Length: 128
Image (cartoon, rainbow, N blue to C red; front, side):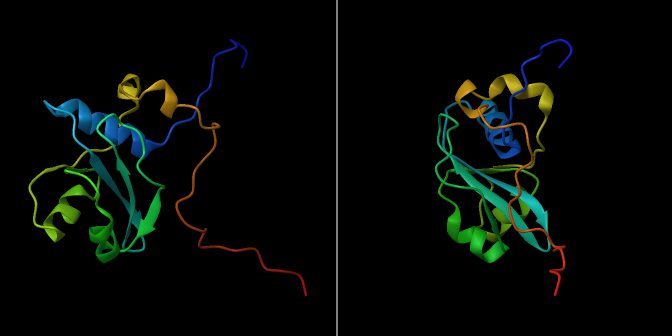
């Protein structure tokens, strides 16, 4: 703030999609699957230009197999999900902030705050 630096938010899934697209010779749609805990994956499909094709979802592995709408799978759960759908077209990669320049400006318009893929495990107790 003291330097008046611009702060922009982005989704780590969009960054993983951009990293995967950067590895491809020809752009193709990418499904990003990240380990989410509780045996689930955070899953989101991205088009060949890196734009989201739908919302982020927290899914079981079986549900995730039904939601793949892409030619490649990328992310921390890519190898597991690729095994479930019997494909070798995957990139087991993590988001790397040093590669943020790969993410289009239109994908960096989120407020700089966390995104939660599911409700928190802990809930406040309501007063009786």
